[in-house]
Image (cartoon, rainbow, N blue to C red; front, side, top):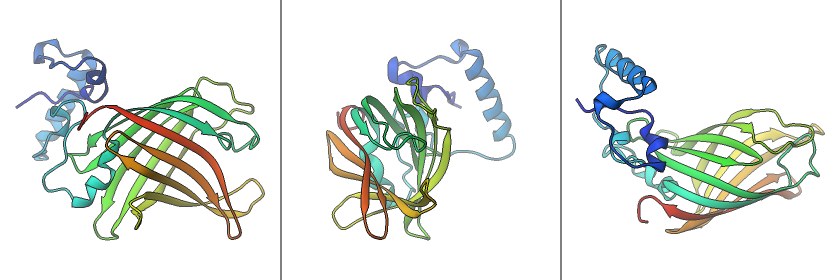
Length: 225
């Protein structure tokens, strides 16, 4: 059986090379040992996306809708501008560079992405629910190295997402602002092209919509590049 190397998902991004079984790091050896233990339970993966280079590959049996977020797979160099980065200090602004990486995961049936910036780092797992006919996106984020005042807390949660009639991927989740007023947090991927995409975050109230952040991304590596 081919070695199933956990760190291929990120380390290969910097140095794309195959590691022989005898040269595995202690962390990889521990992961492979655990993977073999799982296999003894009769649990097997017919598709090994992590073995198909740093970006993985979609499972042939995955829902066709998986390709709706496939534009993210690869490396994107981005610029960001946020006015709502810190919910404890809405007037605080943040702008700068952002690195966004995405790859196929969970046996090639989902897409996982990670972003890194001075203001904060985070990850998402995007899986399509064929029964509800919508995306289920879970996320977790932590503060970056920039000292925002007061420092924002780590966040976690989930969105649902759909592709609208304009070809945009729209993620939504209900939320409540600092004044106790309910709104819909909306994230939209738009102007999606082979070489990048645009992203925006809005707080949508009954009577208004407030833009809280924008990201512009250029694809520099990955499928199609």
